[in-house]
Image (tube, rainbow, N blue to C red):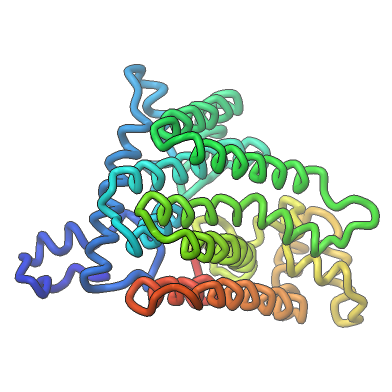
Length: 351
């Protein structure tokens, strides 16, 4: 979407710019025209509701709760909820509330993730744990979960049940990632299952909530939910690849952060599981956290030119294709086109 022109209905350029540029960095897949305007207006409502949700009469609590929201982000989950809602009545207030629930849940997990990862930066800003303390970051995440639950109470018991099951998957995925693959487990299969739980589950629920509360037909809700699961895993896979191939600063963090922290993402797992003599040195390097600067640069260079990176990119494309296949029953039109464009975006994105 762009704001460098007047709307077709004669809306002044400055007004068009205000409503057609969402607080999202999701990229060029976002549609132009009436659908783009509807999404931007919907996201503006979400942003306003998010600001209310992180408010507090206590200044420090308000600052901590709003820290990551104010840092920006792609708003991937609420945007998908809003897009799914376009197949029904997207103006229903429950759609906005459901989108906010999904984003609050996501933000809360980020506070906790930064503590577990000992991260110092999130979205280009100091993480809450580095700015304050681990205890403050954990408690702030808990606060956001509480605010999400408060909104859910108005959406009905079924929404509460779906969110509880989603949250169970989020936590299960985090536990399994923390513990790691067990003896006899396929490390690659374990990794992909973790991504499905940690990322795919909430993205799926975002699509499901958006469609459900817009009154979309049940069969389409199921298709959109399945789409969300697949595209959510693809999105996380692309994040992992960006950590390897991005130039410094382009993704908001230094390239090879996962290597330094000893997190074996899919390319490293493929290398570790293989026996290609050309990747012998790479296997040696990625078998443990790569903290030495020279070895880190070497490992990053080897990964970028490796067959293992090509294989991981192929898996990313497979998930994007699986997501696209779920759109077969979605009515032809702007919404399906936008969802298909999202499948392309997750494969080609660079930040």
